[in-house]
Amino acid sequence: MGVVPLGISLLRDILPPERLGGSIALMSASMGVGALGLPFSAAVAENTDWRVLFWVAAGLSLLVGVLIRRLVPAGRRATAPGRFDLPGALGLGTGLVALLLAVSKGASWGWGSATTLGLFAAAVVVLLAWGVWELRTPTPRRPAGHRPARRPHDQRRLGPGRLRHVRPVPGRPQLFQLPEATGYGLGQSMMAMGLWMAPAGLMMMVLAPLGAKLSAARGPKVTLSVGALVISAGYGSSLALMDSTWGLLAVTLVCNTGVGLAYGAMPALIMGAVPQEETASANSFNTLMRSIGTSVSAAVIGVVLAQMTSTLGGHALPSEDGFRVAMLIGCGVGLVAAVVAALVPARFAADAVETEGSGPAAVRASSETETEAEAPA
Image: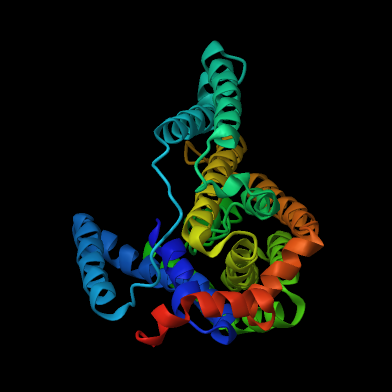
């Protein structure tokens, strides 16, 4: 999970300022290539042992490791002292386990049961204690403690829960594969579902240059807001388009267009808020917040679909109203994310624009890394 934020941070060390914005957007959107794994996984699951998926992933990881070792420049060495925050890691992990377990199991345990309420209470207490601990931790490798960086991290956490990799619109795989007899399912096979979803991930790659140009012209703050609005529009349009395969494809293309715009803008905003030696830790913290948002949203949507069901052949299935509620949640949270992004302080946004390559910050970053970047280039 740390590979992508580290790669984005490395770009700041080895590339000239005029190429930084477009490269960040391209690397962020490259996760859309993962969409090709959907039909591949379906083919493996339908025709061979599911363990093949893990062996293929292991082999690709080894290959990528070799290529990184041979082709990727080392970048500059970190100069800021730092240490592993064991109490912080344990506190965050404990709080999130309690929260996600309560959200995902509350329906079956009972929302008013002692176990569910106890887990919610434990999550609140532990996460508040974790926040206090992090604010008092003296280590400089604590991007959450930098005042300008807080709002973008919060935006990513508030953003639609699918701002991660190439995750589809909530419920879309189910809608593709549910029987047509339900009246809203599309009766597609697993392979067909993967093929229908694959183009949406590639859309992120296509939109990366456009997002970089928008950030260069208007600033990454605007790009992030636009991306959130586009995602919201995609979720909203699903209410009228979810009854056909082409309609669902259009919905996901729109949503992933917004994801592609937002993915490239967020690292640029963050790098404008922290010193260069803390770029990697700041981007990693953003990845952590994104993962938290995805985990929480997946649990929430899972609860919605599990509670709003219909019966077919004696089996309980998510109902059409359940899918519509899930889409409305995504639409509403997308609007909230756009508002939060628009509230990024002007000074912070200006620093991010400079980091894109047109101001003093870019010149300073270039001069600091010129010696180290010259040989690799």
